[in-house]
Length: 258
Ligand SMILES: NC(=O)c1ccc[n+]([C@@H]2O[C@H](COP(=O)([O-])OP(=O)(O)OC[C@H]3O[C@@H](n4cnc5c(N)ncnc54)[C@H](O)[C@@H]3O)[C@@H](O)[C@H]2O)c1
Image (cartoon, rainbow, N blue to C red; front, side, top):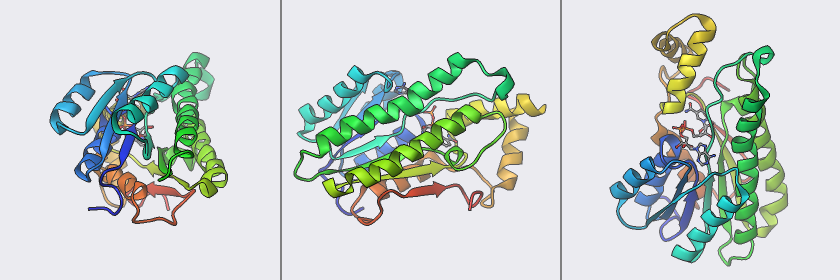
């Protein structure tokens, strides 16, 4: 078991699928009370049925301020505090060259990936700073927050913004007893990656399977990450195993991004 997790309460956004659902399962197995949030309810119902006790689900949109307040209030009402926050919800940007960009898509991606991260961060800090045990926050960013790539400029810009938010927060909130760190996954086996493979393939004249094989070939570990491997890193950062890690941008990319 990881140090310092049992008995704490975590809010995880984008928890109905992929990395968010895997983080909920991992934290729950460490004895954490879980508040699982998503805009779609189906995956949440399955997650709650699977985990049984110590889980509450909330449906809403991370880009809506009122919804975000409700997620945090739900955590405090049910479990008495909000100790851990995994700001994970993000949307599939598609693969579009800048010249073809529809600004409605830009607004949609920034609303979820950037505004959603800011709203969650603000709500978490407001509550955690008044608690005796303070708190711990992890954002899911991306390797798109570290470098540029053709066809994904909006995702890249949005994830650089998330990294910038976390770096600034680290300076603001360390003295309040709240830690914040960022996990930057490389390609990870989730439905988002399935959609990205189709988009990359359309751009380069390949099919999704061809894209998958080509990507796996250039990753030194020879495969995508599993969502559970990203969740393990999130849980580690949220635990007391690494109390001096603060403001860190942690890449989990199978060796592709050093
Ligand atoms: N899969 C990858 O290869 C990869 C790589 C780097 C970063 N990421 C990041 O990891 C995070 C999780 O992605 P994933 O791969 O698990 O994708 P996913 O599509 O499997 O899961 C994302 C979840 O977020 C939810 N969501 C989307 N918009 C929301 C909103 N407005 N409010 C609440 N919930 C919302 C979705 O309903 C979905 O359940 C995202 O921030 C993504 O950018 C993923």
